[in-house]
Length: 396
Image (cartoon, rainbow, N blue to C red):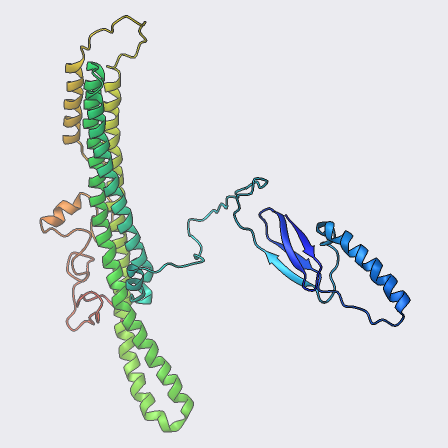
């Protein structure tokens, strides 16, 4: 709501009396036109009456501003702005959505990473943005790990300064367990880095397939353009049609490789990701349970002023809890179910096999014997710029 005062002079002006958030449309009356004086008596009487009415209308313009305006009126749209007036009341409305896909931002802020993303082929732009966002998330987990370790150290130092044996011992051992919880966050970030590196293989494959698509589309456009010119371009059309057949064959191989790599690497990447989530959760739960056991050794019964507390006698039991937590971490084993794939097992534990040189997730040639029951053919089409020269089974 907005209350205005209109100054009806030679050039009407507006002064805001009170403003409340909300977009509104205000109509300002234009300058009054003087009537031609046909009769002096009538004109003087009308002018005096109009002046008196004008003075009265200026004092109550916020009531008459909603009346119909003439053709010379000026319309102003007032948008809501934050203000600190003491009469205003701010009401915040929350927009909720049922989809996690965010809408297009109204304003895009450029950065150096944005320009690098613009250089990516159209097919791989979305995966490129996902990989960059995952990098930011990994950095956040690493920062959280460092902060958690620092907080654990500060907790131990604080307990030492309380001059209370029970608080000092319990806070010190709580700090040890809390620091280990922070270390699990760092291990989780490292697993996310492995998951992110596998997503890069999908992005690289998408980037390599884009030129094949563009080349095929360009040849098809050239053929259509030459056909419109008539019979004089028939020879060129024949040559381009043969080239189009070769381009379609190469694109068929590249598209098959793209769908194979996308499905295989997507399963492998999120197998690592979700297995890391489970590992971090189970280990942090294990540490938190032992930390809660420590709290039972801290006597919090109230004491009467002047009385002294019982001496702290649970140092050995608290130490045994730390040793039990350490042993449980060492003996922890993953219980996740393996992710089955026709290309091979892609479990998180398979990363250790990959480090030892064993194939994981069907990373070998898709046409090698033993991978999918087919053998590589001599002279089989190769992927032009997709993922090296890896052959793909193409139906003939």
